[in-house]
Length: 345
Image 1 (cartoon, helix red, strand yellow):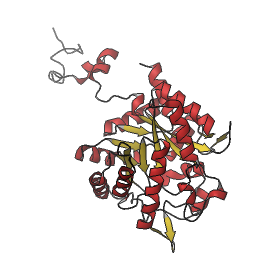
Image 2: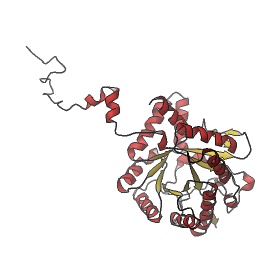
Image 3: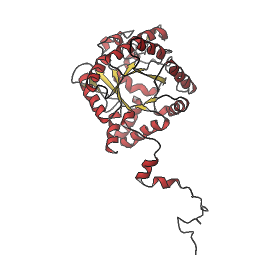
Image 4: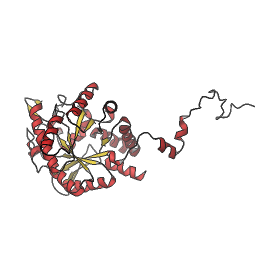
């Protein structure tokens, strides 16, 4: 009598190899859920939103299907819905009218500007049920589209820091719970932390865009905030990181932690998962990742063309960020992801 024909036989051609069978814990839903190594919840999400002047206004963004610029009243209602879905925070980005832009980005220091007004309105409505992340950089406000003050075609570091510190304090006064410098100037974390503390905002979280690369994936965002035309063909390579560099990211993060960052961020996301993992393994600090506009657009356009299943691919990307070590994920998919999570508990 032979047992060779039985697939469960210990006398199989493999010589009884599978004493350990990894597929055993993949067989049923309950056991897959039990042994799942990476968890995702709506509280891991930060939703970037774009605000414009006016009331009851929205504007579609052609390069980001499904994303709209919103007047503040609509943004407040959208933030309320995000809070109800369990999204952790919103990140506000202003679309400054062209007539209010200047060489030095003076609108950034106006207490009634878009980002400060939106922050006050969302804070008043949502209280502490939702985090409010405010971007600190000058690119939404400068006529040249760069993140800092330009002198002779070069973004000067230390004079920019002075403006960024004032900008950060204004946003904290408006009700920001997280100040997020995205400018990549040297020393800005230490300078902003000192300015916030001296102004009585020692409780405000400082989330640094610590490893922000000079990436080609930012194009749709620049369309969204209206800085693409201002920037023209210029690059930000003199202050954002070279995509070829990995060790430099570790140095950037180490400096920002030393200067007082509470959370550090990697931007973009999917093309830089190796950086996320290195930072997670080397530093004991909360870590964020930004699934940027180009990543969003690729997934959206592919889904619209029936090349991929949107929900499946977006959720897989979220798990990839978490698996790599990210605690927080900035994504334009945040409300959708939160809704999907709620529908598949």
